[in-house]
Image 1 (cartoon, rainbow, N blue to C red):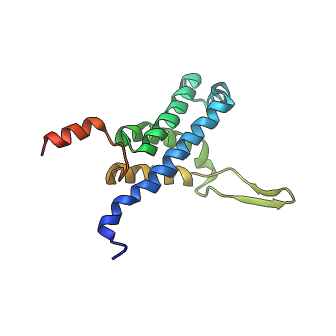
Image 2 (image 1 turned 45 degrees about the vertical axis):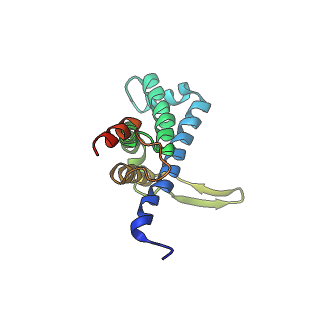
Length: 155
């Protein structure tokens, strides 16, 4: 049989790792390119305490956490601060705009115009992180080297 559900289940983690890892890294890189001070100004406007520190922590979480997920290393550990970033973004920015992440406002000669995104994508990222923590990081994952050593000694 070409498609065996029992043996192919392990492969489900790969697309999750790729999109979540890349997505987080892309967001962190965009914040870094625009300058952490610009992101700190946004956090300040949202009344986030210690906005400069939180800007750097968010950028590092997105870059390093995204990379960890992408390569399948330390996913349970990396998921905690990543989930915190998502929850803060959801509560402080996206919640007021409702669920949908796509709000088509108009089609103009220059293209589609969209309204502010809701919390849908935040929930999708949270669900993917939860699936990776519960189901494991799948094949081609670096995994947690400390856990791997312990796993072999417990056989």
